[in-house]
Image 1 (tube, rainbow, N blue to C red):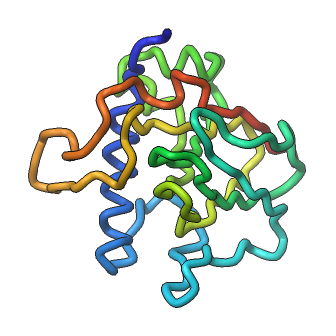
Image 2: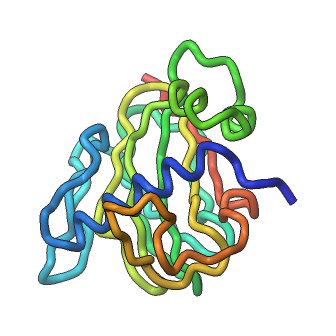
Length: 190
């Protein structure tokens, strides 16, 4: 089994903070995350994808994302539903144009170095049986990684204290889901 990768803690905490902000009603999300916004609170359905984007409905289970194409032409809007028994997230990053390392190599780098080599597209989470509140849009040509950093054994959204430097309470103590296979690479062409 692969060990915990350095990129995971930063993205997990960033994602947890984004979910906390969205669930508190502030509607805040990471500034660099071009999602289409939170769900319609009345219906619980994710917001609609931009009309020009190809919509892809991704299902998360233990420990995999459902199959989808490896290459797309133009913008892609990813919706996420969790059909597993554990909490899952969908994080999408884009490899910077000048980067030659594989995503596996990037995940093994020290955190600061790996974060400098990718662009954060967005993150959304869903508890078991739920649909995530945001649709994530990947539009720029390049190489992308979809990944789940949630630790094995986490079954509900952890409680988060933004003032604490400690990990969020309620996280499982197993390896991150991506080390168990919950990651998918894809490309976007012109």
